Length: 220
Image 1 (cartoon, helix red, strand yellow):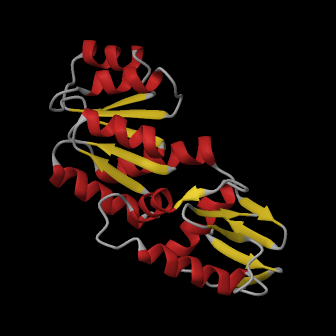
Image 2 (cartoon, rainbow, N blue to C red; image 1 turned 90 degrees about the vertical axis):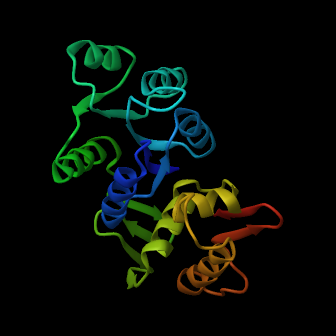
């Protein structure tokens, strides 16, 4: 699952915001149309949707309404439409909050951090001898701290959050690296190998990160 889906047709704004959020260690993807936003959300999900209203084709109000048919994910509308009626329409369609453009990016990020802290905070994920601290983003194996890269951490966290569920390679790759990544799918295989070397007693005979041939990987 993505942390944040940015729905914004101004790609300069979207790319800048995406860079800021990724520096805060969020898993982020961008959609520049309402139709693309629905497609990405239905494929990958997102904990928070930052939604513009004025989009080509399907507008933000329609996106909000569509997502609310089946999901209670947090929807934060960010729009240059500042009339009271627009704000009421967005909130009545199910948006959780409505902020005006132009916004201060530091304030927006602080608001997003607050949302994640209130709704999604889980300080530790523990499975057997493996422990992830999601606040400090640390990995411990047998109570010994193990150094991991940002992508290794995100990949392991995603697998552990979906224990015993086989996740497709494409889903893992696009969730961790982003749908706009220049990396190749082989990058996922390499990171799985590195993770096994750090958490498995016998990396060539893994008991935690299991390969489902032709499909993907699961955590046990």
